[in-house]
Image 1 (spheres, rainbow, N blue to C red):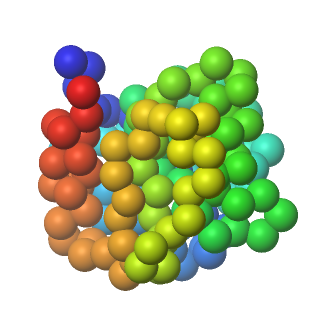
Image 2: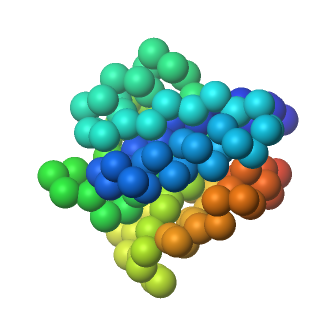
Length: 126
């Protein structure tokens, strides 16, 4: 099993991006993270950065999280993904096109446990 090191994250909310990035950096798990603002920035970093894990906000303007992940999958990318959402039951249409999705994290999340939460989800992937 691959060790989790590199994380690519996208969220349209600048405060949420900063909170996720700082929480992951402060978790002292040795993660390297790139946080993106736009779908094009995310897709560009996907090929350059070669992340082990994707963290994608579901509700974003212009291109929502599931649509963005579907675009990534259409390029042949199979990086495991975690969605973040403030909605209790997110609607993931065409989930089979999006797999592997290894979890959904609810917002607000605990900044102190985010690194551990990511590792727990990572360890449950097949």
